[in-house]
Length: 86
Image 1 (cartoon, helix red, strand yellow):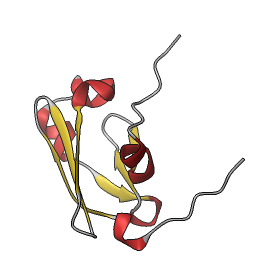
Image 2 (cartoon, one colour):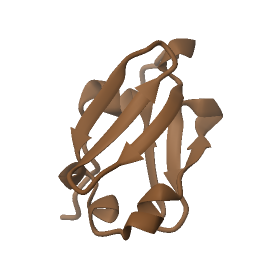
Image 3 (cartoon, one colour):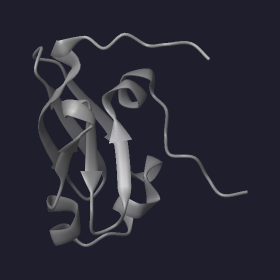
Image 4 (cartoon, helix red, strand yellow):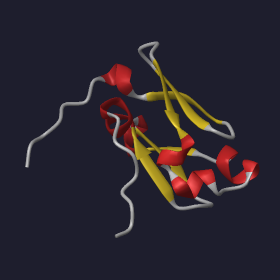
């Protein structure tokens, strides 16, 4: 298992969830935008559930308690969607 070093600038500054995309602003000024289809729990959540997010993992992750979704900035930066059920 490889270890991944975390850059402080890769921590979450802000999160916006629209009807079709997830947009995450990082502390270093970058903005990551990915299709909401990558995260089915968020895709099917209500706007209120999508808006209810919390920082997780010392600021390197996002948690949506209403839909039990967790996303890390590392996975967003690497372009990794949520795993699909087999």
